[in-house]
Length: 116
Length: 109
Image (cartoon, rainbow over all chains, first blue to last red; front, side, top):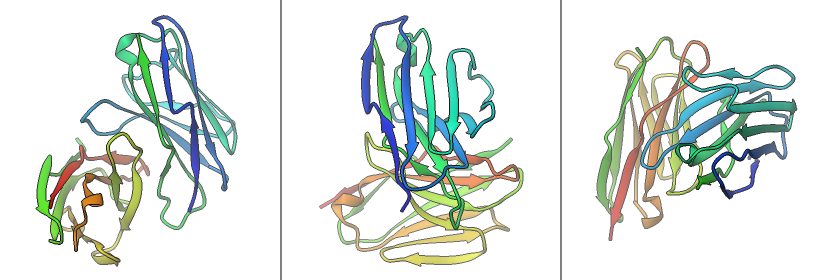
């Protein structure tokens, strides 16, 4: 099956700093990548959708200047949380689709961000 | 608006069968997905239904009725490792995935 990696798996940072999370599709070309956020005991919340070489499409209520997404290649997308605050602490998960039978999304292992 | 409903939590016994229901109201329909998510981990793909009927995959089966806006995930011969959250997601007319809140399944010995 398709493999998506995410780095780092967890990060602790001070309030006001920026954190970059990488998402890579390892064995396929990801046409589209998705970034989700999940708070404890809640469902996935889509933050943005990105296609290689174009600007990301952000969901309503997600600040594009705070959550910078760069999809520079068909195998790499990055999410940068700028000027992080404690309320940004969450589980961030990327997923990607490629040329799959069902167009299903394959998820990275997630990044747990804690902002002190 | 778009809406996915599934029970918050269910409990079942090891070796038994459990059915997790999902009802949906979306703008358009391009398929329904079931994902499994263990605590602290990312979701993993289980099944996809786009036509009415039952899709069987080993111990797991998924059913869809488009006219009723209804699906279920059936898990047989439950094992302790099946304890997880099960997420129902519908792909709408814009090919966006609309996610349910997930059903936490607790398996007791």
